[in-house]
Length: 335
Image (cartoon, rainbow, N blue to C red; front, side):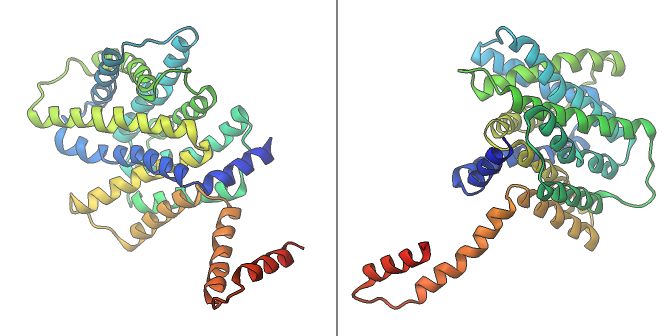
């Protein structure tokens, strides 16, 4: 079982098509990284549950209205479970951690997700974590910490618990999404709509009970919520679930490190926040960890070994008996 997975992993690392799928899946955490900027600049303050509900429920209901496809059989409860893990509970815990902790602490806690996914993938999917990916997972956590942590930190116990629980909830959702897949004949968009609706149904009453009735929204807030619902949630999760269906779960989980990297980049470019040399190094480590986790040591070795062979062939002058010579050389190498 393990050898089969490793062979498949090597094939996937060499496939341009799967690299394209990885790039599309990476757009999801990159768009999630814009949430901090949109929230601070356009949305009403102190409304985390309302923001989470408005991200999920309208988008989910819109998909159901367009596709007119509801779950069947076991997919009623599976969609509810996945929607709670990937959307409802994750959004709620994420915002609790963000409001009770400095943003750097919350981001660092969430960056532990690849390590949690590695353990769950072994328990639920039988995918044994490699030392290569475990090492890059630790490097990624260090990179995010260097990038976003600053002095005079406040460690609120509830915030710490919410941050770790949020990472665990999302990791469980990732593993179960990979294990269950999606029903035959159901599009990724429909599958995403089921989960967004389930998560939004969980969040909406919590927002009303805990935060009260929504405030009056201006054009900036309406634009911000529309962006988060359509781009940062509906399209992002559709790409994310498509990547989970076709790519190794351990590799996809590393793409989440791009979210705090994007938030840091936007803070530097759009808000004029300074980027120290330590933060720049952490930014580079997060990106290198994300890219390296999509490969395997064998793939890296093959890429390195191909270059001398190409250069040696290019250095050989053409001769009239080029075809026989190549055949003889190939035969000798195969002996």
